Length: 165
Ligand SMILES: Cc1cc2nc3c(=O)[nH]c(=O)nc-3n(C[C@H](O)[C@H](O)[C@H](O)COP(=O)(O)O)c2cc1C
Image (cartoon, rainbow, N blue to C red):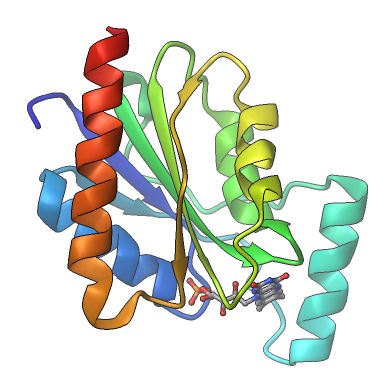
């Protein structure tokens, strides 16, 4: 892939990060992890209550500064775990803060059984002027199949984007 590629990823327990790293390996893109300024509570119940509240109110947590600005990239991979049937609020913050007009946006998600289309819809809603491709949904970190899963997805999405351009 010759075009400029940025991989943005929020990962709480490391699975989405593994997927992001495999995408980086296969595309040669630049990987930027995002972090909320205020870490989520370590206690799961409190964590869940906070996440549900952020999703309910649409509140977007403030992020630590990231190195890369989306402006200089043509293709953006954006990854998040499934949190309560949608994308994690830190990724929502990043998507909300960046103008992705005209860019190819390829979402990828890690989940533990909930490969719900609402996640892709959340990305589309936040980035109405981007060209959003078909999302990749990975159970956990994909295990030993991760390389093949990503290879197949990339081939399909890049072929499709070339047809459109
Ligand atoms: C607060 C919270 C909510 C979650 N909600 C869902 C869910 O609704 N559906 C699902 O399939 N997985 C859900 N999960 C599980 C994660 O999506 C899954 O463990 C994922 O692989 C974690 O990715 P990460 O290691 O990059 O954080 C939830 C996890 C957390 C912490």
